[in-house]
Length: 283
Image (cartoon, rainbow, N blue to C red; front, side, top):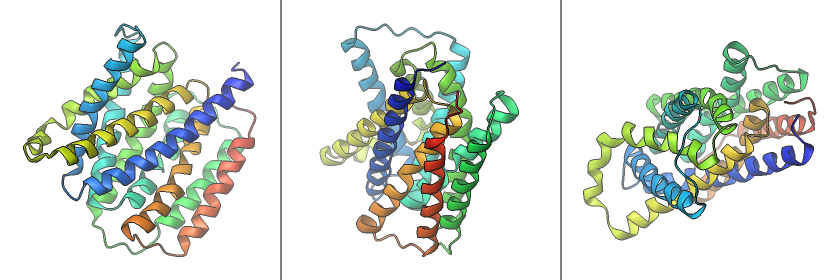
């Protein structure tokens, strides 16, 4: 049984990670003017690997993996989700890609019930239904973006939903930094074919991409820490808080337009979050 104070700390970590993920999405959209989403992801993974090993050195921790099978699966699905998310942002918009990515709690619940033996109570179901309805309302517009960006966003959600389960299991036996390095290693391999764009890097653009990596890593480490103490379905729904943050900032920074359904959808999402946070029957 997880103590109450640790659950609260886990929830705070997940809310803060959502804020950093929102910053990441906005930075990726700004960088996509100059580079493809795949190259931005490649640079991001490289920066994160360096930062992670720097953290291990500072904390005097060795790179030692326990339960490597779970660790590798976390890396495979986590890296796929992150790379596809960056591609979705570059092909559409930061707000729209974040919306599609944030459908992953539905996949967490579905795959958890089908394959991982996770139990869902009435509070989880009500929260998922409200959040899912909100996502559908926000998504139901006549966008000018093509289907490839939407497909990448939905695939990133599917991969993330599966990854969350392996993340939680791996986090039970490995430090947060070690857990995340699995995704970074797979990610840099997945995106290596787009590494050629590095020849056109200038120092200001390199600094921008390094910032993307640093902010993204902060979000990932906070998420890995939070999921050690929070039920995957509950924690995933908390991540919905990045959606209104990213969409609001996209409106002001990139003139992204929204239908009135966006505001109705946000209402449903917030209602689902409140039900989730008040739900006490969680593992």
